[in-house]
Length: 296
Image (cartoon, rainbow, N blue to C red; front, side):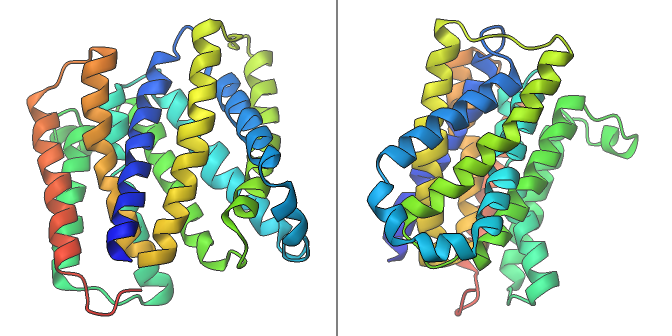
């Protein structure tokens, strides 16, 4: 079961690594809120098209839990991606990818504070190593800038995205026992509805960019892989090994995101990026190998 979860979570991380790159490639082809709107419009239509029989079967539970499911979409889908797609306007896709490693750290802290989830010394060390990598990335290799509060605006926005996805992961604890198709449908609708006022705000500000051919392709790619495939596999991974251990695999997002950023966007790989990646991978290895015998 753990091996299957590892495969699910690794593929999800690959899709999310590609999402950061997609956001960077979207610049000039489709604006951030426009991309967020069309991503979830496509995703909602796709998931409903394949889920009608299952939605009918799960309707009693969906009706009882509709508010929670909609909130999952607003926080984990719309908020996270709106912050991410805006962040890449001000910072690199590599930075955005690496900073997502902060998600499992916050999940770990929140689970401990709220639910007293059992943790080991090795997990604490692993998360500390990961945090050092995030700090190195966010400060662009200059840790002293953190003390002076001179973070890049894009990196600060990405930190808000990290908080949003952490809250989403914690809320998954209360999801109803429904099929993954139903679990995707209502949050996708919530994400779509939440993206409408954001798009309206962007249009009112005169910053909206209607998608060209490349913009449509990027929106469709994110709707299929970053939205449906990644989210489904992440939920299955959480089901199999729990949120603490599943969250650790988000540390693989920097690896895939960095490689794709260099290959597809042509971004420069700096020494501090390499060090940060090593810290992220080291953190996940230490925490996973030294986890408590009974994981939450």
